[in-house]
Image (tube, rainbow, N blue to C red; front, side):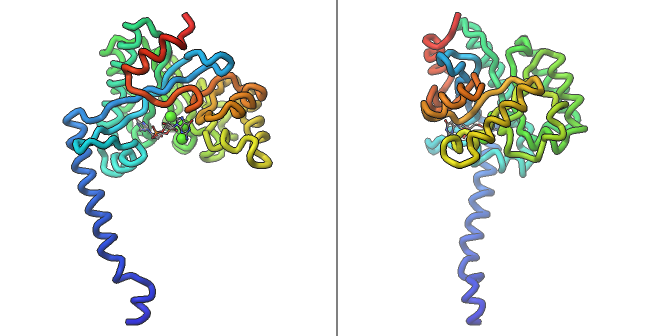
Length: 278
Ligand code: C2E
Ligand code: CA
Ligand code: CA
Ligand code: CA
């Protein structure tokens, strides 16, 4: 008995039960959220770091919970993936992104808008058909749409998704490899990834000037990207020093709190007025 008490098994059980109950409850609320339009997008600018001018947006999903709080994607995307809701969620995000592009165009702002798709969805046979059809129905030219997929997704399911990514590029869409440098070693595939852009993960940006190898790692990523003909952009740029160093190392594009936080569409329209090069 004493040993049981020591390892704490009996004592912690109620907490585990509560955690599971909370997840279930959040899941049924998420199901409701999808039906009741509680999800919305925030747009974060991508900029030319020399002058801060706007080159694009990334759409990031948020959940306006009926109790008033805004829930961040890290808290519900994994839940949606586990429960099979992710297909509907991603589709909703795509449609909201297309609507945002139309609103931006109406305001005279013509830049690509990126959306994130879950790896689970990318390997589903009908994913690309649905994507293509939804874009067509919206009347938006695919050249204004960008897909961000993480490095591990792009490499893990390489054979399955590569032909599909190629089709999207043929349609005129841009493809970004997100969180580049953090995933499976994609070096073997680097020459042949069906992508237009590599996004340097913010963990590397944050290591610059901090750890011994921080700058070297970023230098290598930038060299590799240009060697293989990819566009390159850094995410999570928070300080002037990071911006300066990235520019010095040859990375002209960036995204991060230094330039702008993710914001609702209405704010993005206002923000763009000052930062759009016409
Ligand atoms: P991500 O694609 O790597 O997105 C970048 C995250 O970094 C965003 O967090 C953004 O708000 C945050 N960020 C931007 N600038 C800075 C900065 O300067 N410093 C720091 N510390 N953070 C910064 P967010 O919006 O919470 O999104 C988290 C993750 O959730 C995203 O990571 C993406 O993987 C996922 N996600 C977001 N929206 C969607 C979506 O619509 N569908 C799917 N499947 N996943 C999504
Ligand atoms: Ca992303
Ligand atoms: Ca990212
Ligand atoms: Ca990330």
